[in-house]
Image 1 (tube, helix red, strand yellow):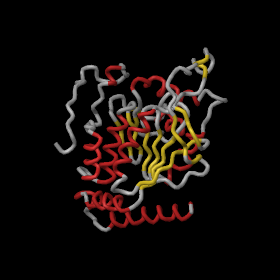
Image 2: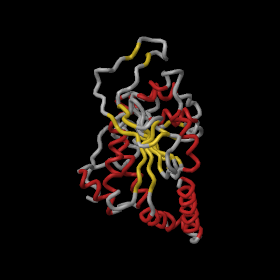
Image 3: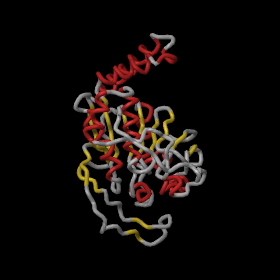
Length: 291
């Protein structure tokens, strides 16, 4: 079954390539983009979401809410992937501060909602889109049991077969540690900027200090938490088409007005991120999609 799924995805990629090559002026007139949008509307998008102890709740459920509404009209399959199947808590694992040498970090008093992992990294299906959330877990996982690297390993293993790789918030910490971001532009949670940039072994990453989200090829990275929803709206518009009726209706059902300017980032000023323009406007006006 897994082999058949991979073959199906390869055929889908080939068909998209043929549609693009069929028009020599496609890059100029947008024909290739429109053709790919139409193809995406007809195929099943296989979405995978990484889950781990300490995931941020909105990092997952914000984007997932959008995919959920879109799936009423477009085919989307979902795999929630962890190192084991079953319930995974949003409560970060116990770990030591100060690079693993400081006092024990105990967060047992924090709410610990759970999500159910449907697959492990060993038996996950073929994926078109992989989303990696952030939260308190990424850094903790780097300090538990001599560093747990299954997320980075899975990202590396699947990267070439993916159509798109998305990260929300400090999920880019995993991507940087995997090496996938070497030589690429990316952003992350501005409140955790220093930790991510310094701890992820990411000196080869071109970190963008002022960005709601960043796109570099097939990699999409967002700033913190709620920014993942704005990125996901932009991604769905990229996937299915600008001003797509289904995506627009999803936003109206959610009563959510996304920020559509990827360069709007007041939190780079709030958190005094190095390289951010302190004189930039922190104000923005959003309105319902289509109005």
